[in-house]
Image 1 (cartoon, rainbow, N blue to C red):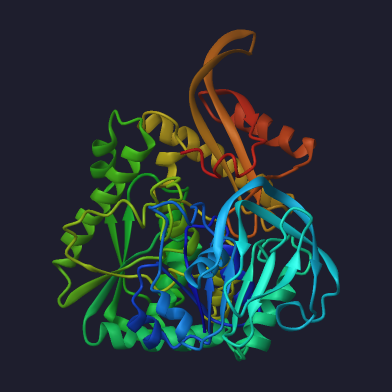
Image 2: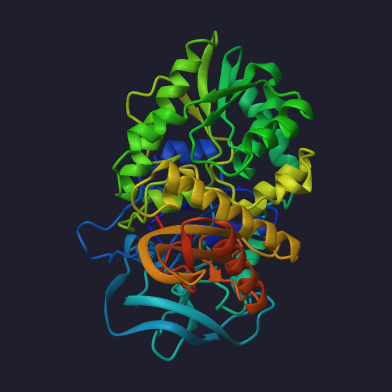
Length: 508
């Protein structure tokens, strides 16, 4: 396995993806991880990520420098390289010229990281500091016009540094560089697959749970569904799934769940109608963060009451994924919190159940592959993501029965047309957002003053970035026409053409 030390880079998830694409397992740890913990993990190699900090800033993240004496290959990227060079006795200073974007990398040697690449290639820079002096034993292996030490290594100590980002698509041979590090230098076996993950994780779950029982909130989405089947494979009837009807779910969720999981997979499922609890708690609330916190709090309250009815229940399982974690907290440097995810930031501190999150470091595409490995059908595996807070964050402003009914009907029409026209599998997500605005319209020769519905449809690989979907005008017109004609209270439909970033996929 490869250990990634997270110094707060926005690209950390990409480093992990590039490694896993080569069928090598990787694990991400905070810089505060102890040297004893690192030794116990027994990594074949260590990658120090980039980050927004400067070495000479007193608040910049640090790690135990003994990692450079473990005789384990270390690759420093951007800030990670600067940290390594500084720790070994080199010098890092603020650059006269910052370097962002494309740069032409000139390569001095085709060995090691640059094997099979050539003398020159494009790379992606993102730094305002630069290395002016190398420590003893280091040699320059690559340079750009603006950065004279763009790559360096100490082959004897097996320490390597890249000032640019090999993990991003903009670096032409970045994947080759990462492959050279993990396979040629670190000698990793390329045997980590969803089949091996499934086997190892079920064993881990068995060892952790032992003879206790686990409760899982089953929403019907891909994440919770795959988590449920994985746990069921590991511990069987020790798992009790609880479907909480919070009143904020899609049309016919309960019927779909009963058919797919209770009948087909023979899961223990308890159906709880908590609609009034959630809606009463959300009455009058318009702030999206408050909505998320309230939903998380009420959700756990319901779970703890159900847990009291289940003997020997000690764990709460969740389908938390890595993008959820990366958007909610910074595991390394001072990166910004974009939003608190319902699985990460909405749980009360006094929760009685222990968390078990077997998918915590998987990306969505990996979860889908795992679902296929577990025998889940395509309709469920390829179901579009649905947020834990449900329609609460797709109703901008106050949540009422009438507004819930409106957005459910409009969303059902959208999904029906998207599927009918063959776009469902091509899109990452597609949904309707109900706005807290009204506009004047004319329907049946009468003036109307009704709500605006926004359509959001995006393409993405992992939800970390997304682009608005270029749906045909005819399809958008058909969806708009049906929503306005068939859903009372809507007289105008708009289409969201924002990418992520700067926007998020969900509106709240």
